[in-house]
Amino acid sequence: MNRKFSKNKQREKDVIITIKRLGINGEGIGYYKKKIIFIPGALPGEIVVAKIVKSYPHYIEGELVRIKEKSPDRVDFPEGVDPEIGGLELSHLSYDKQLEFKRNNMLESLKKYHPRGYAKYKVKKTIPAPDPWHYRNKAQYQIESVHGKTKLGLFAPNSHRLIDLPKMPTQNEDTQKTEREIKELIEKLHVPVANYRRHLPGIKTVVVRQSEATKEIQVTLITIDHKLKNLIPLAKEIMKLDHVVSVYQNETEWQNPQVWGNKTEKLLGKNQIVEEILGKKFALSPRAFFQLNPVQTVNLYSEALKYLDLTPDQTLIDAYSGVGTLGILAADRVKQVIGIETIPEAVKDAQHNVELNHIKNADYIQGATEKVLPELQNSGVSIDALIVDPPRTGLAKSLIKTILRVKPETFVYISCNPSTLAQDLVLLSETYDVRLIQNVDMLPQTPRCEAIAKLVLRK
Image (cartoon, rainbow, N blue to C red; front, side, top):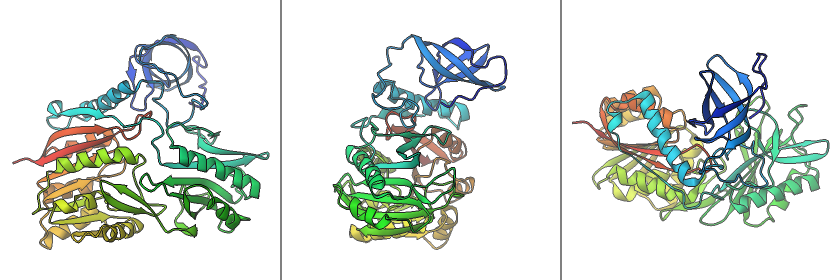
């Protein structure tokens, strides 16, 4: 946490706090003078000394100073890593307790928004990851060079302070090794590094993604400006690194709040890398979305498809279909799959993946699901089953209204945010019964978790 000092009397005051529970972002929660205080790094049951760094009308931000009484669930934070780094918010908590926390997060979200019948929902225990470390197959690191010293890593939360990452224990070893080798090549070849403070062009971000199935590595250099000194020589050297099969350039600009820009160009190598899940192949271009934990993805998708209860006479709608993973995995269980996706590149990848897997009964359409669904129904398509996998913001209210009009018999909602899932269930539960919610831990050591909700049309 960055220190943000308030101007009140509590500034930098050390206080003793008993931690009652964890917040949704994994921070310890206690109370000071009847006001809630958030202390990152503290665990339930601990008595800690904390520094008050900022006080707001309804809550306080605290900073852990030391632990007076330690929780039996506390484990050592990974060595050699700055504790301020994001992505390791729960790594001081035993893994069994992380899984409990993620289930409790779901229960608390349901309690907060109370969709119909929520107290009777079957919320199953979180499915653990096969390996809670070294699972991420994609690294997206920022780079900067100040006074001749180059850093490559992640920004500290809520700041532009870059933390160099020679080691990241949730990253798989090949992607981490490749990131560090690329950093050395950038320095060796004197390739310009983007300067945020002076708005100078150069490389801004280095993205490395590896296929779990083939071990192929795809590298994307996100740059400010297109033509950079020694960029092609750099790409040629990167192609010599172990497992690297392609190098891309993505061009962005300082005004863009997103990491990626709109223009992507292949510099060298293959067009795509190929991942394999449950016997199906998926070709991935640089911007194609794919789960960051490919081994646990097998469990996530297996559970989701199981809860759909598909039959050979059904039509399945795969909304937010991305590169077609779920629809293609389900294709041999149903009469027809129709995928709907707003991003043109993803639709193109999905169509390619249909051909790659010799699927004859799957089509992918570009458009907004809330518009396409009624059009399909009006054209005579029987919408029997639906699966949705939206971003963290959840389903648009217009789409929920469309689903309630179209009324597929059964559908599965895959969510990466318990709060938005619980909010969306408030409306959906007016028409659907929630049969169960299954958490799947895709991102160990973080507060995040995927949840699968099975919904069945109420008769």
